[in-house]
Image 1 (cartoon, rainbow, N blue to C red):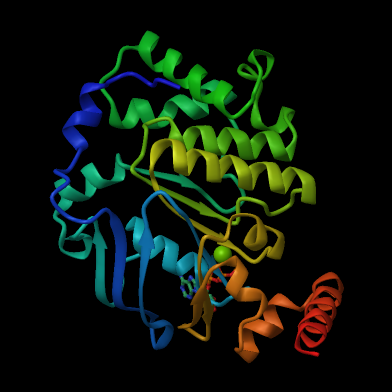
Image 2: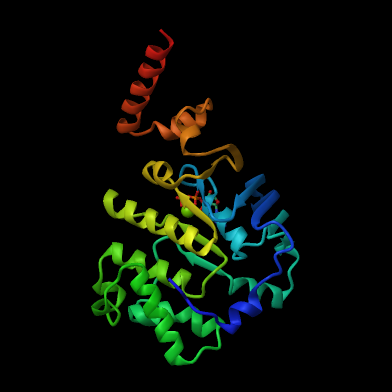
Length: 280
Ligand SMILES: Nc1ncnc2c1ncn2[C@@H]1O[C@H](COP(=O)(O)OP(=O)(O)OP(=O)(O)O)[C@@H](O)[C@H]1O
Ligand SMILES: [Mg+2]
């Protein structure tokens, strides 16, 4: 799909004279005397769905918010395409905000705004397009996430949870972001709808070549779109790998996480059985 050229996108673009990715170096975050992130280093690659996984309370949201600037890290570096955003001034921070699309935990749509108004909101904040252009662009992304015209004038309370997620995704991509973040995009959805949402995020990542980071504790998502996964535990990066490697990971905490459901325990039995058959 051609989204056209908008002046504000040109203005926000950085020269591509460095590697495209997000890198964090020894990132720490404490609240009062409680250290939640205890020194995390990793690389989130562009054009891939990077997942942050871990149990509830492991620090996924704090890490994601530290990347988007909603939380100020206590120490460490956050490099967006080579630039340390922790040293950004107000203006640089504002510019970066215009390049980031976020799907917040629980969708976080504005209840008093229609679907269309929700999606148009980032354009009103960050672009200088006319109302007509903003509406056109909003319609394009709403159609891209497979929402029909009838839903455009509805309020969030009048549409299903799955549709709300689509609206949240449309709002996140409307300003054609370079960086796409989603915090538990599947929470509250049935497994099939979750898969559709995962696939949508993956397709958009490839289409826009975004650096996409998704928080999840859903193993289905891991198996569906886990191209690059970091596993958090007790404020540390406990493990890193992809969706194939995670099934045979030799790390107790990862095994505990992956095989916490009966379905995956069964799968482990099958995998181990196959492994022993192959040996004999
Ligand atoms: N603003 C804050 N002030 C103090 N402590 C905080 C704050 N935000 C998060 N925490 C603490 O940081 C820890 C990690 O929280 P976080 O929300 O990142 O977990 P999570 O992995 O996203 O969990 P979930 O899967 O339930 O969303 C928790 O112990 C939480 O209480
Ligand atoms: Mg969270």
